[in-house]
Image (tube, rainbow, N blue to C red; front, side, top):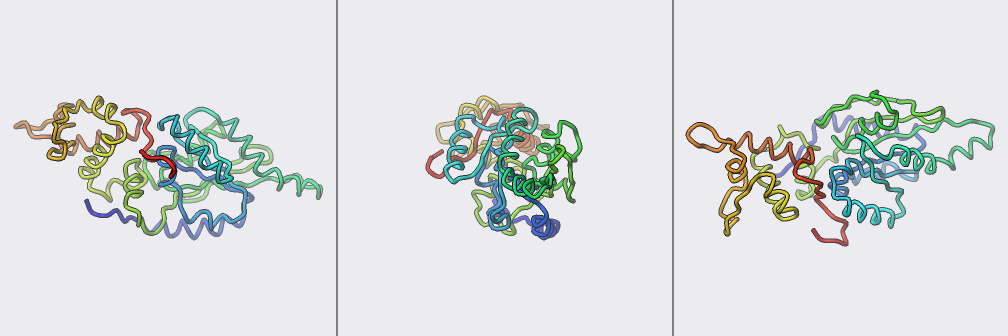
Length: 285
């Protein structure tokens, strides 16, 4: 499978816009995907954010292994980051609001001492398809930001008033210019943060199935009815999945295109199970 190297033109524009808009906000909410917390954190953000208060939300926690999510929270908190699990489709919006208020309390108090009721402006940042717009909608309790399960839908900033003295800015997702770490790039592709059109879907699904058979073999084998031979290296797991699920064309040929689409879609939707793709650096998968 060829290296993944995808950085469309609008990403460069998003980066420039992010750098400009950071000057106008008081704090930042960074979203990562709880299934791949390191791979989905943009390494440029720390430098761009600087000393501004930051809350790290491990979003889509309902799709991740709860036990491993706790390991990640302990890891990030050990780095003095305010980190919370979050499920943008339901869950702990109240806890997230409280964390946001605590992180910006020093700013509010400084302005209050000057006789000003400060409206705190926070920016929601993260890579494509990490769930930023859904996050904003969940906090507000209404659909105000455009949502899709495809990366790259948000193309311009959107200011949303969450409370009397709190506004959120939803921003376009930003990938770093070169996906030099191909292992991390694969994780991004598995969860859908890189457009499928930029990758060979069948090869990607084959890699995903092989990876799932390493980290969650029972769940993967059960979902795709995989009859695994003794010499697993000699077979195509995607072909076995097509056979197991009955994805066949005329003449008994495997419908590899359908099999790949189903494998990717079902993993991303959590139908295979609650699976985390990576653990903190101190642990091993």
